[in-house]
Image 1: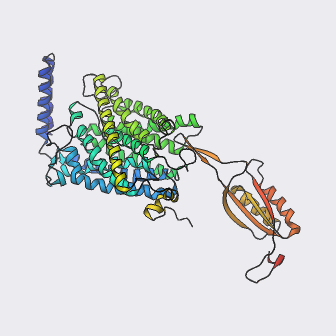
Image 2: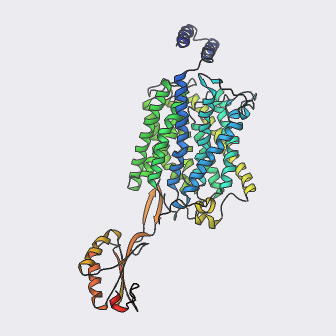
Length: 452
Length: 112
């Protein structure tokens, strides 16, 4: 409390200085950095139990998004003979990503010490630096490591949607592990670890670039390299269990409160606003997707409305710390329309079997939100909370740079990793026979449904 | 003896069963099946992509009867299963060479 009060007083005095000297940009810059230093030194040694409690909770919510939320969401969308393989992919990736995060991921993503802007240092490999008393701001570093780990878990798990029903399990493990280190960790460092995009003032509150753009671009690349499922696009079997899709999607919605509101890294007003705008965007995108589908196909479908929800959540993710409620409605509506047509574009126009629409929903949504936040976060008439650049046009340039860089790294690195994994596994695709039999039987020796 | 094999819409199963019991038919075999005729399949749309469902759920009812009541049974099934919409199904009548009741070894029409 006292430190907050002091900080407020200092802030006020600096603000009056700014007012007096607003024509001198050097003074402005030094004043702002002094405030930041005051804030950091005031917070660095004190553990706030309220914030810690929320971060513990948010961590559990984000893990819940993958296990079982995303796993069920994806599993319901495939044929009944592949349901277990999708659950297995998500579960195994969650375990593998956790170990990699402990070994090198956290260090490469979120610690300085490498002396460059491109990737983090190696001082936290195997978390050897960590003690039980280590703090990150006003909560334990252990909690911060766990919270960020759940993001590193869900991101490669999102890519599963691109290669379901036809990939070798060994290829899934090798690809996901390499991808986490080569794509996720650097991009995470660029944006959240103090790398070059952070220095330019990029806005990505909870992972529009770090999570959704990287996963979407990589999904499209791997789907194009792996080839289409047999029968794509005309004689495929439809989603085997839309009820399971809805169950998983609803878990994602709930978990997303931890994802976005937890990214405030505190139980404060920013977290509250993030939760509100996250919810509004999801609800709007669901309804808009449903209406677009109703109009173009004649029927409002369950799989459609819940896909709209995921699109709305992915799109608000980068913007959830910067927009107000009205901005959230606009983001949700844009997501519902643009991601809907993106699905058709990828599958019909590009002819790529990105089976569960990872690129169209997560990639397009993440990039859309990352760009829209420039204007909607701006303190204009739409209730934005503020952006990092002077004008929204300047911010848009930075946002676009971030998206381009993340997509470029994702595409190139995914291409190289898949070539390597393919060489190691003798081709990443299962035989035609196994694909027909279904991966549950062929790869895992189990059967999702024994209904006799 | 005739084996009357009727492929009908699943929701008509109860009606057909009732109608057959009313005319004294005491046994039947029911098989859940999939198929299509002129009705063809239908399409389902998920996320804007069309999926063609070729095979529709159907029910096959098999009843073995003495020759003299075969026509009556056929009429009864037609009346009970008809909705006058495409996809109502078909009836095939097949001659039966022999029937055996496994419990007693009885043969011929007494075994029906």
